[in-house]
Length: 299
Image (cartoon, rainbow, N blue to C red; front, side, top):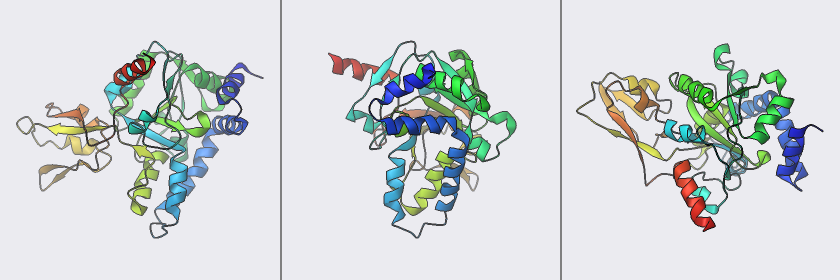
């Protein structure tokens, strides 16, 4: 048995069923997500079928993502110590029932690999290598078992350069949580609204019910400085959620639709936009706050 397989088995303990799910999930990453995508595509035709709501909640409680701002992403890829925060408080950050653990073990270990969503959605070839694993347990498995998806080890600096590159191309940064992978963080991807199964699932499922979402907001909203704005429309071009739009030549911001990704802020040539932690939304996945909270619980 390979060392990475042993690490995965140890992570799941007596839940051998989850180990098996985790093992086959990564070994057959592409067909797994391709099949999931076919289910997601059919959601848009099922808005009338209300009994699907409980099924959707069951699935999304086990497999979902959290949108990250660039600054919160930078903190993850600058981490040089183990971080473990397992608490019901996490549900204020990741509002799902089961997969809510925030764990980074040996976070300097980073691997980039082909994204199964982008392969399934026929994204441009240059955008395929964009899924990032953080932590030895996931990175070692990818390197030992997933050669067909072209994994390669990279530095923290290289990871941040990849993220910056994709954010300029309208890709949202997301941290994924899945019961089968231990219910914790570990995979962070650069997701385009047109080629991400998670973002598409959220879009289609919201037509059925506002309660259904595979994607948790970052926790941020946008502040606008009218004196700096030149109405260039760049912010609306970068927004994949119809939260920032231009109507009759005027900028309009729909705060309820905003996922707080920060792409509009980063693209504004006049620095007219900025993010703020919105008290009426979820808490951000901010490692500074999480580390402080974890320390307070230990004392």
